[in-house]
Amino acid sequence: MSDENIRIVPDATCTFCGCVCDDMVLTVDVQQHKITKSQNACVLGKAWFKEHGIEDRPFALIGGREATTEEGIEEAAQILARARFPIIYGLSDTTCEAQRVAVAIADMIGGNIDTTTSVCHGPTGIAFQGLGESTATLGEIKNRADLIIFWGGNPAEAHPRLFARYAVTPKGMYIPNGRKDRTIVLVDVRRTASTPVADIFLQVKPRSDFEVLWALRALVKGHKVDPSIEQRTGIALAVLEDLVARMKSCRFGAFLFGMGLTMNRGRHFNAGALLALATDLNEFTHFVAAPVRGHGNVTGADNVVSWQTGYPFGVNFSRGFPRFGPGEFTTVDVLARGDADAAMIIASDPASNFPQPAIDHLKRIPVITLDPKTSVTSQLARVAFTTATYGINVAGTAYRMDNVPITLRPAFASPYPSDEQILRGIRDRVRVLLGGNRMPVDTSAAAAAL
Amino acid sequence: MAEMMTLIGGRSSKQGTALCAGKLGPEYLDVSSMVEMNAEDMARLGLRNDSKVRLRTPVGEAILRCKSRETKDLPRGILFMAYGPLSSQLMAGDTAGSGMPLSKNLEVEVEPVRD
Image (cartoon, rainbow over all chains, first blue to last red; front, side):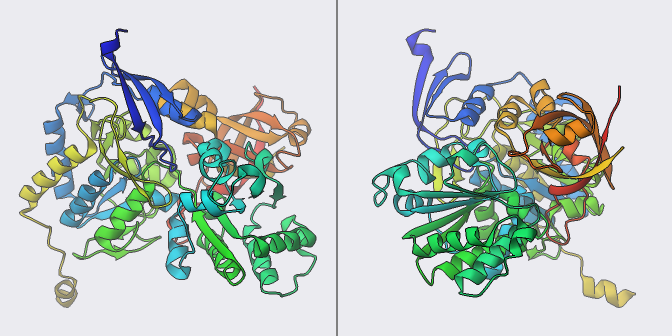
């Protein structure tokens, strides 16, 4: 490689996970369209940068036949304009700018819009609405928190730099000695790669998180808890009492919680119990709680869908205004019930991780996918677009898991269009086909006619 | 003889790096078709590392390869597997009005598959 063929991109951003680390130094082989070195990246980030070069793929496939992007846009627009219950899903691995256009399309077609949040921290979002949240940025946690409690997650494998950059080892403004100034607690049903990091490990029995959290709430409030809690949860009362003493006496405590709470029986009740415990603890000290988010811009999806519709996920426009309905308008439900008659999947692969009944319905309806790579979902799609990768080829904005927006600095250009460019094309064509926004069915007139 | 156990789905770093290469690639298919099981449970069921085992729920079933974990790491009766096409086959579509299907702590029937 000659020197002029090498480009160094400082302060680049990794969008693999919700940490959205913005201190990458990328070495780019311009001629080969690939990143050869990603300084500061974790094992996941290194794989993310290494594997997102330019692949030789068709710009679009329509029914398995190679097509141009423009032909794909026409076919996709026709599908969405014809559908009576179209759904738009995914959005957690694309820019906020693309997410915004996706919401506009959902509004225009009177469709359903949902993000991967619904199968991630959706229950946390439901709990937020009921209880509020005592929260902080990761910077505040790094600089102030002397007690960190990881609950139901495995950051060492899913968010490797969370420990080193924010929550375990770094020195902070009021944490001058870094690791020595922090007590780390980990709560999980099994030992993971994260467990050795903890000073205290609470191995709870499966399906016992709510009971442990509620017992902690009782102890924080000075109520008695029966020692039989150990038989139910696997955690001795003395251990819970010790943890409560530590929580009440710390200067700044933080819960960082994962999907061990939300994907489990109890779902939003589990997340709500933890948020309520954090609120209770503010009677004694400063305590915050924050969900640890998976995909690079899933937090941006929550923000964009919220500022555009008023709700974070599971939103339906069929009556001409946004309605929020977890369980009704969330994607697993609309697919498993067989409601949807067309789907546009953006930067996501539900056919590889949704429950089988939902996947079965995806196979029955016309699907449009936007993805840099071939996926299980793109393989069953009627229209499959190849897109540029956000953060590597596409500039824009992504939100870190603590709701801090970060600017993306692309490393090299892609011959493929961005999600935003394709979505704008679809939006403009759908607008022509529908003559503006689809008018909602007049339900009162329909009812009167019966 | 089948036994009931509790299956936890989740992420792993190997799965994370494999999905960057592509979910249709051999590495991802390999990592998402492995189930971790308590070593004592495996011995009782006559299973070794890489033995095949059938997991079954009321909605579907999947055949995976086993990997043993010590009791201190993975308690008896608990299984762990990375999310992927096979874990999907075991998940029900009902979300109890939440939008979230149960992905962790699934009750599964475990049965050795003899070649």
